[in-house]
Length: 467
Image (tube, rainbow, N blue to C red; front, side, top):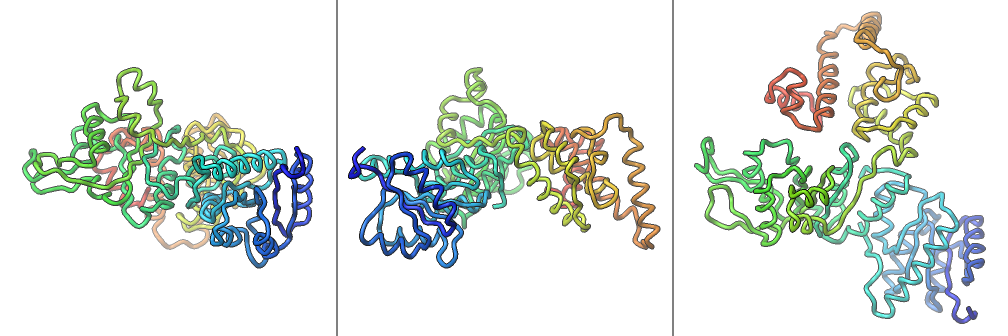
């Protein structure tokens, strides 16, 4: 490639070593690479010439990478920008897209990956200048993850942040599908409108139609007043339908009609109601198999599957487990009003090696349990529950011994508050969470496991403030 035709890349980073490594890597690939330690110097130079691609760090003294990218956009310079960030949370990814970035590159990165990304950015820039379909849209919470699979989720949320298209979220139970749905809403043009969530398996099949579409007074026995359904509640905003694969064929037909026509009738109603609702659906089932088996409408599947995000199981993102454990240890301590416990390296290794069939939800429950039952301030391998890789052969006396030890410490420290009032909510909460996990979130089944009625379980969940 002649010098005149070689693609050029500018690297803006106050770290001399990073700048040097990237310059050498780009030059080895046949590019013209130029480094800038100061973003303002690069801005001044942009008035004279333009590179094909620009790489900038997000953290720099004075003007940071996001402000730098925004200033380039304000100058109406159409330039693919790659933002380097040491932060691996969703908000950093979204911020990179919102600043106008083509892509972001999380640290630590592989130099070959960086070179490949620059080549893709340059190609996208050439296509855009030639009038082809444009490159990545600038984009938009609590979600964190260093694993490549989670970074892919963050990227997709960022790219969808200025759109309101329908999204299908797939993944095993407990992988955080609702968190992804909430993030899509919070980083969308509908952020100031309602986010309404409905687990379609948590409502009795005969009541789900009324729950979704509402009903008129007198529509059926017990309908003593008009009810506004979830679609109307979400008007202007987002409706999240979890476990969509379990929806009955009749309701699938009604949902398809709403998606196609944007209107519906309340149960027992005669007046068409128009709504503007973004649908985000989720399932832990393989909908392609369900369509092939005749259990899910193919036309509805294609309506929902406009964009797809897959939430990875925890066993495929083991590098995130230490971060998640530390996060939920802190959160459990806040919930229980106690000091956060630490965890030994050996215990953390055992948790990282466990397969987590219940995914992040199972990890959260295990951390809460260890916060209550582990003696002392440090969680050790012997303190891990057997079902997540702890010691085997435990008996019912293990937790009762721990409870007795806790009560003994309380009394020895001069506790005057009734012990039962303090222990019972924690005890009941642990049992409820376990039953809800075992039942896949179905209250009727969880209540049966606990020996309660469904109304009792609903009341307890509300009283204890459980999510």
